[in-house]
Length: 170
Length: 131
Image (cartoon, rainbow over all chains, first blue to last red; front, top):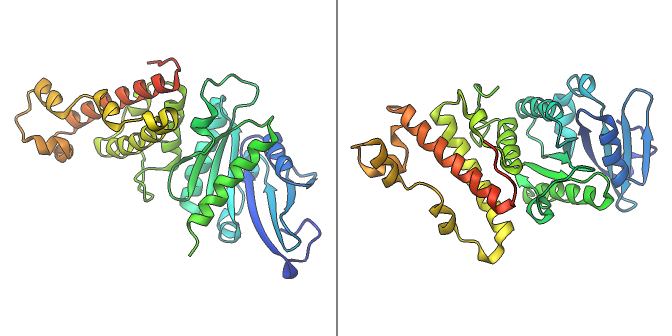
């Protein structure tokens, strides 16, 4: 998974897989977090977020249903930092797809993950303070709402995932 | 899907948890989701939703939040036993010990409590509750 120019042996890299029923949402999420984004011709998107010269996070948007259901989760999961599943909070079909993927992942990985419902452009009458810190589904799995028109929001989502990882430091 | 809850450490598939949480945040009654669920699975769901309801209560009300205020909106075990005419010891009902012997009774109790919790959270969130 080295699509971006980097030498793994001289840097520390954390890899996060982004999936969900909408590639544009995956792209938006990754774009909000990365200073370098590459969109390939086969419906995938890659992003690099540089924390320091030595420490970087790679995001892999693996495309829509036909891609993420066939994805080699069993091979990739042990090596990745975690996963993010993005979907439109208001769409029932979109939710059902994420629900199926989430249940499938529960049987394949023990990774840290976060499910993110995008509320952009639609009225939601819940105070952000209620949902901005996310909800735990288990010790490694979280749910959060995300306004994809707000760049800062994506960082909040990433922070929840990173906090989950830190909580499991040995 | 709802008929195949599996124990993944929390007692439920995460997709099921997420569905119940979604309904909670949308002010939607969980009745539709509860159809066909066993009493044992409903116990896991109730524990999960109770935890989320506490989180939401704390986030909405801050220092003014009180768990006892929340409990006041639920039906007490004593009241429930009285209504169904149950002669079993009170403790059995508190700990849901009859879940295998009298599944329908436990299901009915939890369904009612879940609806009360969902309705309460709707009022906390100031959103309309829909049956």
